[in-house]
Length: 498
Image 1 (cartoon, rainbow, N blue to C red):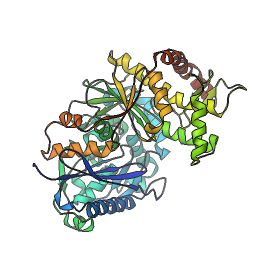
Image 2: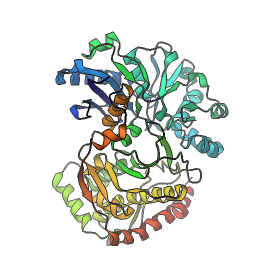
Image 3: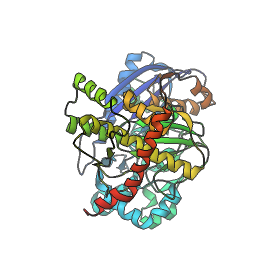
Image 4: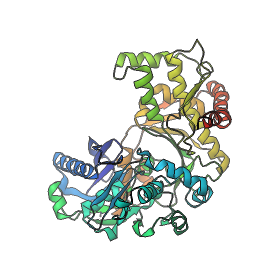
């Protein structure tokens, strides 16, 4: 297929993004809508409302672009955490159970307590979605007994678009990431047997480029597109974002500075962090590319600080004062350490630890607190990077690409560059999820044959933050203290509370 356009859709935690791309992967049209977060029951979200919002977005961008007739393929990525349970008519017996719903945590704690080494060795990840399945199986059996298949949010919506039956339910290969029940391109019969998860409810694993079906006539009419457009299995949103930011060569590193703070490194080897469990194994949508990622709650912690400590959310002048005051403080925030574990540690998973400041004295101000919060996320990245070097035996290639809303915080980018000892860069486009998915869709229908070649044409460096060697040495001391205290003191303190 040589001509035509690509429709790419990102089904995110708080936003739905729609992009139309030409063959050079120029973003011709872009649209963002809020993800409707309407609660159903037991912490679940109304998946039909999300589906309706997706249809509305497709219709809007199709009609505004006036080029809907040229769309030749559709690619969709979505949240990697969370599950939907369907019956034989593709109806959501279990609405979308998102990752922010903590129903799974006691079950994951028990599972990791008994089977951590096996799960890490088999999957390189943690069983968030797997634990959710077990929660519904054990605690909500009246609902679970009617489930025919478990799918991801994106998988459910794609199934609706192409009108398939439950027996053809699928999951793309990258989205095995947070199930903790499989690896590569298959589910683990051993883990499913040990955890008593019936394999009959698990969907077929597909390659991201696999065409799972075609836009149905009824749906096409509702969203102003032609029927019969091929739709690919797609990818998980994190995998798509990493690809769409150009992280495809061994040693490439990225900071996804969003609601979750993700530090990821690309590797050509399939490496698993069996020792620490701090870095999760994630596959790229194209073969033989892997990522090791550490995940925290940087964006959530940041918002908590602004709303609850600073209390000037939305006041531009006050916000500028906060950043200026923090910028004038020397590295280390006058020997103040913040530990950003308000909801526990995500990687490695640890619900015992909590957030705290260590070293507060009379001289510290709100500007010290703010800077120490920014530094804490950078120290977490230092911790992830030190583990990456330990288990891989190699370093990373600079500069580090930063994406997400945090990319706009110049002070934070500079702090991270100084802590890690590598320059930080922002790129001239921020549509990374949609771009990554568009690239995969283009590959699926032979619009392109080599993603790396096409990626080189997509970007220019927008801004560069140069790492300062003097500040890096100052920060190394604090970063090493942070890692030591985190391991030897903080958990012991909070363990006493339980």
